[in-house]
Length: 238
Ligand code: ADP
Image 1 (cartoon, protein in one colour):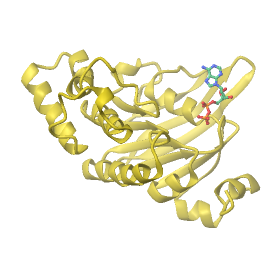
Image 2 (cartoon, rainbow, N blue to C red):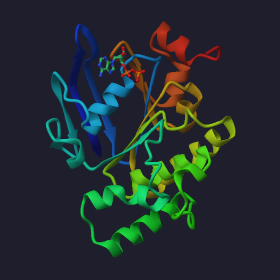
Image 3 (tube, rainbow, N blue to C red):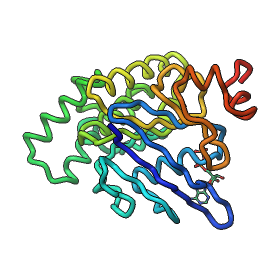
């Protein structure tokens, strides 16, 4: 079943066309990667899906609902950033609860859902810790819990692991995949890290200059690159 459909999405910043008639369909429960060199438009595409940017033309559908003009907070997407974007003056539980408080959920429900989310990312018992007292890996888990606690329609991940060291990165790769699969959550994951995409993705799109250069499973793209650009980007020497 198609969960997210992007139709002819186009966006320019000044004279620079950053997204050039992008078409994409992502299935329910799929962990989908946007991969490509820096500046190719990955983050801009993700931000359109989140509702942070409005396209010049084209449409975005979530569950067949046209959300193109819907503000970000009404789309029900959960977002996880490279920079964590946590509030240092709040503790762990308060950071995770923020999205629910914004939605004015009742207090007992908030407490239960925050506890469940912290449990899911293996941070049970750390709710009262200050953000500054946590390691980078733990902070990233808080960011994941905060994205999950609203029970998002889909999870949007923007280079979520690039600030972590190699060991933590590997650990979090399988964590994120496990959580998405356990809940049948659709995930869209932006990275320029070829290995991350090849090891985690159900399918991926390689972007180049605001267009999708190739779409397929990691195996298809790796074995049969559609262009020299894809071959170079995905190849062993990269
Ligand atoms: P990627 O995520 O693939 O590295 P981005 O989507 O962040 O690429 O950026 C694509 C291009 O759009 C870059 O040239 C970037 O400088 C430009 N860009 C992104 N956001 C803005 C913005 N808000 N204003 C102007 N230019 C932008």
